[in-house]
Structures are given as structure tokens and as C-alpha cells.
Image (cartoon, rainbow, N blue to C red; front, top):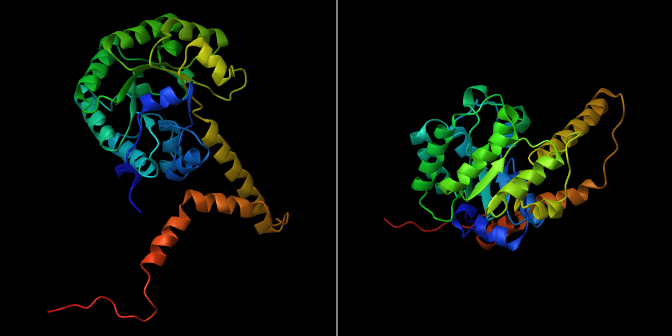
Length: 310
């Protein structure tokens, strides 16, 4: 089977046109993205926190560099033809590093690249916990080099600001508006805490091609529907922690049950519903395709291989 990365991949812009708002689950590994596609989503995102947790068991605190991110993104990208957005952090360095990141991401099929102003030396993985942001001129230059260095005009450059948690919403909006003036295709104001925050951001930035909203399942946080977010002005919605937290909960519960079974504390009965899950897993792994390849090239047991001539 050929790698999906070499097949035709639609653009984020096309997905934004096909679905409004464009809901993009986060894929933390290749299996997850296969399940995202199977569920009918038109696009997905790769965020640092979920992928680094699944692949390296590391928090998203600025501990990894470009090579680590590219390795994880490539594995996910090759498993699907869906368009996707990927976290580019702060560009992993200065403007030169940012240009290199854009080249590397485009080479593996990233359709939209998120570049943030959060300072790497005090980076936090919770959007509402940012401790510091770069000077405006620093992030401006990184976004400008990203726009100049992309080789595919369909690659969307998205400016992310974490200024809300550090300086408040006024400064965050000032930065976001500046990103639009620079020519960014999209903006993301991170860390919003109230419905009024979302409404103000949507009202102020309405009309931006990719206006991103991130929704977290945290007590006290707003939970607007995608339709409500679209009405506010948002064109794209992500649920950054939803899938990785559900996976963690399922694994933790299953392993506790298995451990009690192992120690004799509480016998574990076979779960009949897992036979259905097996079918889902086989489908996501394209088992039938691999078996067709095997069958179409099989030889009889003991048959001689191809003749070799001197």
C-alpha cells in the first residue's frame, strides 16, 4: 500500500468551505487519525500537548525541538489524506529556525501551521496558564518569514497569541489584529475563559478565513456549540484535550481492572462488546487491504522463487 502522504490531499481552505465551522479533532497518533477519518471528519489538527504525551510521555513545556515534532507529525500524516493543521510552537528558535520549520512541515503535508508568541523558556501547556509572551516585533518577524518562506500558496499561516493570560484580552486582540494586517491566513486567541470572551473575539475578528476557537472540558469553562461559535464569527473549532483525556481514562480503567484480575482481587469477565471494537480496529488498520496484497502475490507452498540467470 502506498503512503497516504504521497496521495492527493485536499487543502484546509477547501475543508473550511465544505464545513462551517470546521471541527478538527486532535490526532495524537496514526491510529487516532484513522479513526478521525472513519468518523467522517473533514480535517484534523496535531497539537503539541496530546502528541508529545502519547509519543514521548512528555509534557508540552518546551522540552522538544523540531526533529521530535517532525517525526511525530510524519507518522500521523502518512496514515491519512485528510488536510491538517499542526502546532509550530514559536518556530523552534529565531526567524531562521522558523523558516526551517515551515519548510519541514510543508514537506510532510501540513496544510496550516500555527505559530505562537508564548515564550519558550517559560512555556506552559495550558493555554490559560501562559507566563510570558514575546515582544510583538519578535512574533511579527516570525510570521512574516513564515509567509515569505512557504512554497505552497495553499499552506495557511495561523498566528496564535497567548497574551490573554499575561496581559488581558485587549492586548491579545491587538496582537491578533496585527497578525491579520501582516497577511496571516488565520488567528487563534488562546486561553479564553468566558462566553463573553469568545463573543468579543468573534465580533472583533469576524471575516478572518481561519478564526480558531479551542474548547476545553474543564469545570467552569464555556461549552458553546459549533453552530453558536460560527454565529459569533469563528470558522474553525478544536477540542484539544478531549480525545487524549478519553484515551487516558479508558486505559487507566482497563488496566486497573486487569490488575485486580491479576492479583485475584476481582475477577474480570470477558467483554463481549470488544469483538465489535476489534472490527473497528481492523478497519482502521486497513487489514483487508493488506490481506488482498498478500493474496494477490502469494505462491504455492514450496514453489520455487523466480529463476536467476547467470
